[in-house]
Each structure stands twice: as structure tokens, then as C-alpha cells.
Length: 196
Image 1 (cartoon, rainbow, N blue to C red):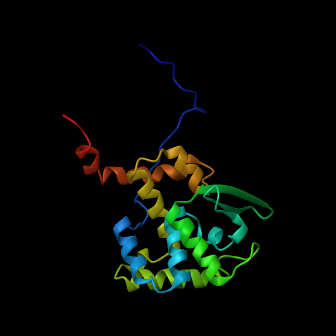
Image 2: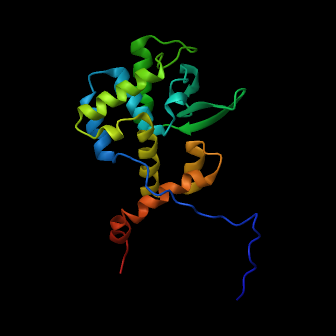
Image 3: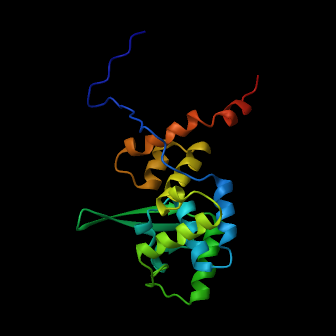
């Protein structure tokens, strides 16, 4: 049977980057978190980078009122151009929701307070110190690596690419498709799941 050809406007071209972005595995992230377990702010910052895939700038703009403990969601705000702010809502797992709630209570934060009243350089330092301190390479000691790690973890767990695109806040799905490359490297779990 002959299928009609897609017009150029409807054709989806998958362009892969030369290299998969640097990322950390789930076990590596847990090891890093264990190394900062005595610092509530640092632990929560890294946990949220890992479990939301947020950009560090988005996370540093989160206020207490952006966390909905009943709906188990968090709102992230991204500055698009200079005047337009895009907002997206992400689901939260119960463990992270509980950690956020405990942190807010411990710090005595109010509705309009920032969760992390720190600058980007401080966030970079926190991540760098935790990753390098846990024994990992300096080229993976960057907040954006946790965003890549979240995306790779989602892909390996079978999250649909369009859902991941929404969670990451990518305007174009092309930016999300680069994470599919990791499937070519880590295919054993697909094979183990097959029944013959």
C-alpha cells in the first residue's frame, strides 16, 4: 500500500548532536545526595534539580506559593525574551513534596518567600562541591547536568517524548529528541523485558 508523502512542513527531521550531553545515573545522583545529607538547603536544591529537570534559573525563582502540596505540583517560571514569562506545572513525587514541606517549616518561610534566596554562582558552587566531593568528574559538576540526567532517566523509564518535552519546557521537540541517543547505548533493559 502506498502512503501519501508528508509535505515538507509536516516532515519531522531528527537531528542528533555529536555527543550525548553529560549526565549522571540515578545511582550516581543518590551517592551525591548522600554526601550532602547534613546540609538541608544543598540537599534540597540538588534533589529538586534532579527530580524536576528545572533550569537553575527557574529553581532560584521558585517561591513557596509556587508549590501546591494538595495537587503535588510545582510551578516553574521561565523568562522568554525580556518581557514574557512562560509558566509550566510539573508533578512532584511524595518524597520530594515532603522534603520541600519540611524545609519550608524548618526555615519558617512565608508564601511569597523564595525557596532558595541565593544567586546562580552560589548554586553552581553548591553543585560543584557536592559532585566533585562525591568523587565525580568536574565536567559533570554543573546544575544543567542534573537537567540532562532527569531527561535521560525519564527516557530510560519510558516517558513519552512529548511528555518530556512539556516537563522540560522545550519550545521545539527537536531539543528533546537528543536524549533518545542514550537508548542506543543502554539497550539491555529492553531486551531483558522481552518474552520469547
